[in-house]
Length: 78
Image (tube, rainbow, N blue to C red; front, side):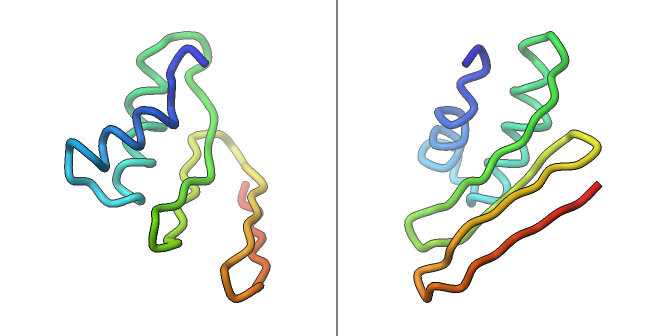
């Protein structure tokens, strides 16, 4: 909540012209760290075309999403 990460992703895309991958990565690597505390986390973001970005700055993060085609995607990285 303190970092307003979803808002930052949307603002970077709308006003900064970044794509979802760039905006999500910057929000995690720059904006989340800026608020202090542990500054660690991750997110699953998508744009209006259905492109997915899943950046994180932790040792590992399990993520999942479903594409419009019904394909299920799961990623586990440590």
